[in-house]
Length: 81
Image (cartoon, rainbow, N blue to C red; front, side, top):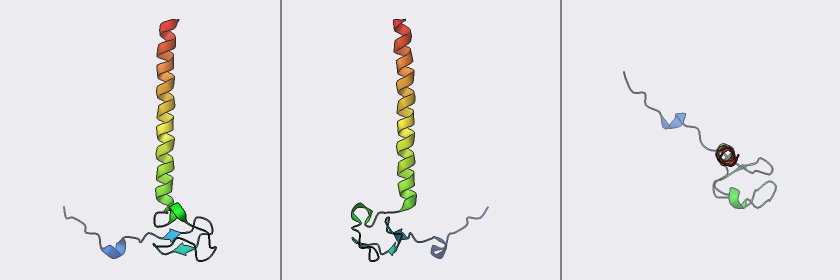
Protein backbone atom coordinates (compact mmCIF):
# COMPACT_ATOMS: atom_id res chain seq x y z
CA UNK A 1 0.00 0.00 0.00
CA UNK A 2 1.47 3.34 -1.01
CA UNK A 3 1.61 6.35 1.26
CA UNK A 4 -0.31 9.39 0.08
CA UNK A 5 1.64 12.60 0.46
CA UNK A 6 -0.09 15.84 1.30
CA UNK A 7 0.91 18.86 -0.72
CA UNK A 8 1.20 22.16 1.20
CA UNK A 9 -1.25 23.82 -1.16
CA UNK A 10 -3.90 21.28 -0.07
CA UNK A 11 -3.72 22.45 3.55
CA UNK A 12 -6.14 25.33 4.15
CA UNK A 13 -4.78 28.53 5.66
CA UNK A 14 -6.24 29.63 8.98
CA UNK A 15 -8.26 32.78 8.51
CA UNK A 16 -8.38 35.07 11.49
CA UNK A 17 -11.59 37.06 11.81
CA UNK A 18 -12.79 39.79 14.14
CA UNK A 19 -15.15 38.23 16.73
CA UNK A 20 -17.23 41.43 16.70
CA UNK A 21 -17.80 42.19 13.00
CA UNK A 22 -16.34 39.20 11.12
CA UNK A 23 -13.73 41.19 9.20
CA UNK A 24 -10.72 39.17 8.02
CA UNK A 25 -7.63 40.09 10.04
CA UNK A 26 -3.91 39.77 9.64
CA UNK A 27 -2.16 37.59 12.22
CA UNK A 28 -0.59 40.49 14.08
CA UNK A 29 -3.53 42.82 14.70
CA UNK A 30 -4.50 44.30 18.06
CA UNK A 31 -7.42 46.33 16.70
CA UNK A 32 -9.91 45.51 13.95
CA UNK A 33 -9.40 47.79 10.95
CA UNK A 34 -13.16 47.76 10.17
CA UNK A 35 -14.91 48.25 13.53
CA UNK A 36 -11.92 49.49 15.56
CA UNK A 37 -12.57 47.15 18.50
CA UNK A 38 -9.64 46.03 20.63
CA UNK A 39 -9.03 42.34 19.99
CA UNK A 40 -7.11 41.61 23.19
CA UNK A 41 -7.26 37.87 23.80
CA UNK A 42 -8.43 37.33 20.22
CA UNK A 43 -5.29 38.82 18.73
CA UNK A 44 -3.26 36.11 16.95
CA UNK A 45 -5.21 33.28 18.54
CA UNK A 46 -8.88 33.66 17.64
CA UNK A 47 -10.07 30.70 15.67
CA UNK A 48 -13.69 29.56 15.96
CA UNK A 49 -12.85 25.85 15.76
CA UNK A 50 -10.37 26.06 18.63
CA UNK A 51 -12.88 28.00 20.70
CA UNK A 52 -15.54 25.35 20.03
CA UNK A 53 -13.11 22.58 21.06
CA UNK A 54 -12.36 24.38 24.33
CA UNK A 55 -16.08 24.84 25.02
CA UNK A 56 -16.73 21.14 24.33
CA UNK A 57 -13.88 20.04 26.62
CA UNK A 58 -15.22 22.22 29.45
CA UNK A 59 -18.70 20.75 28.96
CA UNK A 60 -17.37 17.17 29.03
CA UNK A 61 -15.28 17.80 32.17
CA UNK A 62 -18.28 19.39 33.88
CA UNK A 63 -20.53 16.48 32.94
CA UNK A 64 -18.04 13.91 34.20
CA UNK A 65 -17.67 15.84 37.46
CA UNK A 66 -21.46 15.83 37.97
CA UNK A 67 -21.69 12.08 37.29
CA UNK A 68 -18.82 11.37 39.71
CA UNK A 69 -20.48 13.53 42.36
CA UNK A 70 -23.81 11.70 41.94
CA UNK A 71 -22.15 8.27 42.15
CA UNK A 72 -20.19 9.22 45.27
CA UNK A 73 -23.31 10.77 46.84
CA UNK A 74 -25.34 7.59 46.34
CA UNK A 75 -22.56 5.40 47.77
CA UNK A 76 -22.32 7.59 50.87
CA UNK A 77 -26.13 7.83 51.20
CA UNK A 78 -26.51 4.05 50.84
CA UNK A 79 -24.06 3.43 53.70
CA UNK A 80 -26.02 5.72 56.04
CA UNK A 81 -29.45 4.20 55.31
